[in-house]
Length: 497
Ligand code: FAD
Image (cartoon, rainbow, N blue to C red; front, side, top):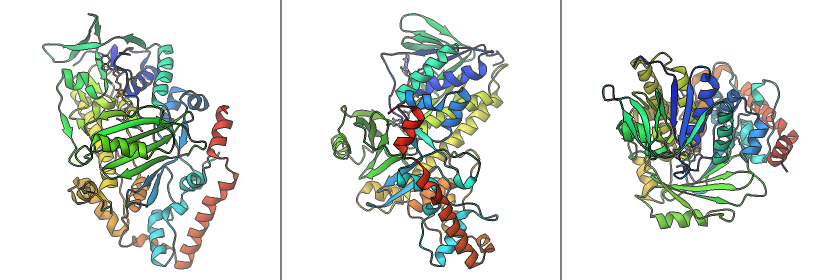
């Protein structure tokens, strides 16, 4: 326990392995040696193309030049996800990274908007959201200055294999040692149960003080060696399979992800500059693999470039993300379907958390407990946000949707829904990746309309309210005509035509 950490071994070189290597070496390279072990023969999962805005912080801490990154990873800009057929067939809404409206007095924007609706105003919350307006217009640009009215948070769609390669190059340049080969087993200290070394198939032994398990769904160390145990969330999130297939790029790339609900799951469409990423997430309890394949291939908007790749998964999380001297990062730590593009972010936040709790002079149980407490809360709040999309549906075309609508949901989510249904009130759990504006958009988008507005919105008289909302809507529209199309922005910014 009290042994100081001189060497970190990262088991696995997918997105999780190379993101961990890049950030750990950036911060700790004066103190520790880092070795990453991966097997080209086993390969990586090779999906995971959509992200959320904090990836910008990750890249900027690494000193990544944004234009170079966009070029190297064939990336596009992501301002939102458009959800089609989720509430009911034929209905669409956006979950944007923006915040609709502006705070007025002490009261959140939705209360004023709800009050104006009671007075007969016929707008949606998205009419006051710059990200939404840009998505619909297909434009994007960067604003200087800090006026919150014009903040337009964004993330990226990128080719995750290229991102891994890009981070590998930078990490190796920074001193990370990469070892090629297959790990056969882990050697445990008989007294402490800590991992002492990795035993390779060719007989080599790789020693370390701290092991980061980035071996993907296998969980080679966290489950295979330490038998940590796994909490299964299939009863809330019954999808357990995916099919992924690339297709030809569109002439015009959209600055948002599309998520299209089907009979027993949903399909993603992710625009990259060299191709589109597509896939279907579905539940094998409700639909056969053949039917799922047909659904995916029948709903591609451009020609497939390969056969669909099948992936099985088990939604849930490892019971402890940090066990003994092993920290599970990436798919070894758990799986939540990519509905809100959270997995790559969970990698980022796991490595940042490890740095915050870094056991410089030896592992203490207090550090381990705090790390595990925060990780559990983060996973559970993402889980609840994903359940919300499924549970609050009005579809009546399959048992899948009917059962999801009537199932029992986690208490925290039930409480959140009850508060919102009354007066549009939202609260933020510390540790929740998604802020109020995200919950607001998905709750409204899935058809949950509060019964009343919060009385704090009475601070304005009726005429003031109408004119304030009209001014915000006009101000949000104002930049639209000056912004380039998304493709023109990418070409100008990256120099790639
Ligand atoms: P992997 O990519 O599986 O890497 C595992 C590594 O371990 C590999 O290098 C492998 O060679 C190595 N390894 C394993 N066993 C051994 C061994 N015995 N010896 C040596 N090396 C070994 N995330 C998002 O954020 N956005 C998305 O849009 C998104 N979409 C997804 C869609 C699907 C269908 C799925 C399944 C996931 C998606 N994800 C998404 C999640 C994302 O793909 C992963 O979080 C991310 O790729 C990290 O994977 P990983 O590095 O943990 O695992």
